[in-house]
Length: 229
Length: 54
Image: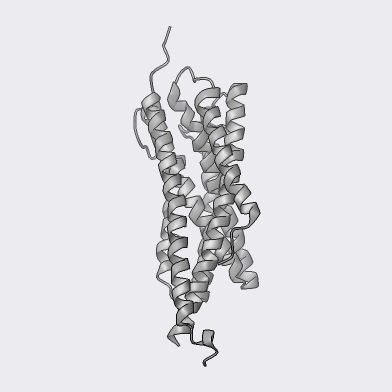
């Protein structure tokens, strides 16, 4: 196994620093929202994790296309990394949303269009790993993963757009739509945009680690084949 | 005048949950990586090509 590149070590440290700053901005720097109280502060991590989650699913669809065109396994490794890291972040998004909903809507969960599409998206990608694991042949597995990631990738823009197209109780932060707008003060905006930046850095860092893990998995798989022959 | 509700427990729960999940994921990457490195070393030592044998 190659030693960890210097850039990755720097990115590891940067990730810890931006996560600490983002937590400070969300919990201390940003003012308390008058109507919802402190629970509104989960919004910064909720949006940050949602952003990298959905971007990762779209990225996985892009790498799926790249794999089908080139048949190069590096795109498969990138796709798996994008899906895995995004699924983790999107799971955090959903749970944080539910925690926010309890005091705000007086319920942990409701089958609102946004919540429904988000839950469906998460389930699609959990199934991605379960189905992939059942395929032995690496090329077939990669081809299946690519097609699945392309089709699954459609759920990301649908989840993003649904609150702009349908009547929903989910607040809208960016853009316009029928849903309730979430007004942000200038200090809240600082915490909001920094959270987007912080989770982007953390996402890239975790992706890089997961890609390295994928290379190692491939190496072990090849060695197993060689030894068993 | 309405007072701001005390919803800090939900906020604390949300942040603790986020850090636990992220920590768990980082640890799982570390653990899988350690196990795979060990597997690779074991398999390399069993590799017949390693000693020039065919």
